[in-house]
Image 1 (tube, rainbow, N blue to C red):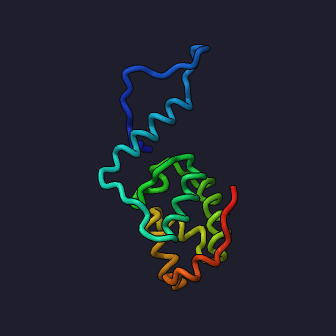
Image 2 (cartoon, rainbow, N blue to C red):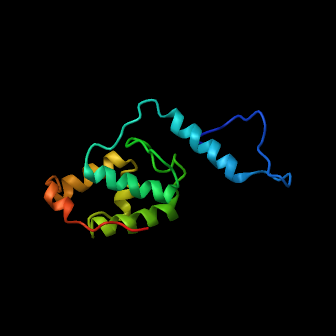
Length: 133
């Protein structure tokens, strides 16, 4: 397998015990990925905001661009299942797990939800359940 991203470090972060600090490495990786997003796009509608909120919780990230790929942000198939279950709270039975794998950005998912189910009316979005973590 070929890595999708490589990161060069001057010094590997260590814990006070002298072991590799995996959390610090993850923070460095997440910061690098977010900074590489040259054209950061904020969510443009309520559907995209809700999807962004879910991704932020599952991926443990802040400020996710709507054109960022789920897997490049550190997502995997298990996290995708978690996203699916949380999206079903807001949009019951609207998307499938396959939809999530086919449309890996917030922007694409928002369009799928809007197109497939006609949720362009803000009134229908406001009546959806509030997500709780």
